[in-house]
Amino acid sequence: MRVMSHLLLHGGVLLLLLAAAAVQAQRVATKTDPTEAAALNAVFAKLGQQASLSTATWNISGDPCTGAATDGTPIDDNPNFNPAIKCDCTFQNNTVCRITKLKIYALDVPGTIPQELRNLTRLTHLRFQGNSFQGPIPSALSNLVQLSSLRIGDIENGSSSSLAFIGNMTSLSILILRNCKISDNLASIDFSKFASLNLLDFSYNQLSGNFPPWASGKNLQFGYLAPEYAMRGHMTEKVDVFAFGVVLLETLAGRPNYDDTLEEDKIYIFEWAWELYENNNPLGIVDPNLREFNRAEVLRAIHVALLCTQGSPHQRPPMSRVVSMLTGDTEVTDVLMKPSYITEWQIKGGNTSFANSAVRGQSSSAPGSTSQQASSVFLNSIIQEGR
Image (cartoon, rainbow, N blue to C red; front, side, top):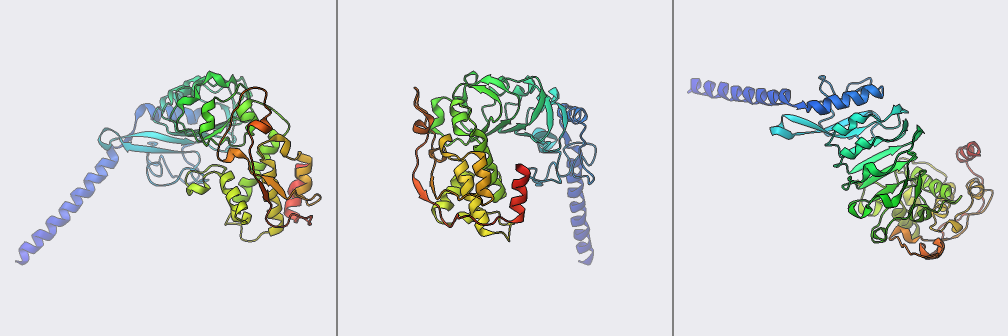
C-alpha cells in the first residue's frame, strides 16, 4: 500500500513537471511575427530608440513580444513603459505574436516617421505625440486599417501632408492629428464611414471645408479644437482661448479631455464639468490626488475654463482678460451659457452666424464666489511666466 502511495505521488509530480515543461515549451515557441519584428527594429533604429529603458520590461529575450509586452502591464500614461509595445500572441495556435500597440510618447524624438510602420498591420493603437518629427506623414500609414486609436502630434518642420492616408481607417474611435502640418480639404475624406469616431482633433493644421451633416447626429468631441473652426473652418483669435480652457480643465482634473476608461458620465470632460457645475459641486472635478488647494482659487479657475470653452467665440473672453481673471485682478463673470456642443452639434448652411446656428444654451448661475481675491504664489507665478 505504501509502495502504491509512493508511486502515485511520484506519478503526480511527474505529471506536474511535464505540464510545466509543456507551458515553458509553448512560451519558448511563441515568437513575434518576423516581418513585424524587423519593421519594429527598423522604426526604433531610425528614431534612435531602444526596446527598454534602464530597467528591462519587454524584449527581455531579444524577441520584442516578451515580458511586459504580453502581460497586463498598462501602456497608456505609464512613464516606466515608454517607448513600448503590446502584443497579441494568439495567432497560429498561440505560437505567433502580432504587435497591436506602439507608443513613443513625449520623448522629443526627431526625424521622419518611418515608412516601415506600414508592416505593423495588426496595430490598433499608435501614439506618436510629443516628439519633434519632420513631415510629411508617410502615406504608407494607410496600410494600418485596423487602427482604433491614432495619435500623432507636433510635426515641427518638413513638407505638409494630406488627409488621404486616413481614408480607409474606418475603425478609428480616436483620431488626433494635432499640429501635423496637414494641408487639405475636409471633403477629401468621407467621414460618414467612420461610424465609431468619438474624439477628433485636427488643431493647428491648414484645413478648409466643413464637416458633413452626419456630425450633427453624433456626440463627437473635437479635443482642443474650437467648434467654429472644427465645424466651419472659421479661424478667430478665440480659437486659442478655447484650447486654453480645455487644457485648464485637464490640469484641474488631472486627466485628458476624453477617457473612455472612466464611467460613462465622466468620459467627456465637458459633460462631466457641466454636470458637476449645475449640481452645485464644481470642485468635484479636482484631481483626487490634489489633497490640499485653495478652494476659492480653484473655483475661479473652473469658472474661467468654462468661459473659455463657450460655444460662440463672441462669448469667450480675450486672453488678456483670462489672465486678469486668473490672477484675481478682474472679477469672473457669474453667468455662463451651457454650450450645445456638449450634447449635440448643429450644422446649418447659409450665412447664419456661428453664434446663432451652432450654439444653444441655458443660463447657469455660477456656484460659489468669484470675487477678486489674492492669488496663491503658485498660480500667480505660472501666469507671470505665461505673460
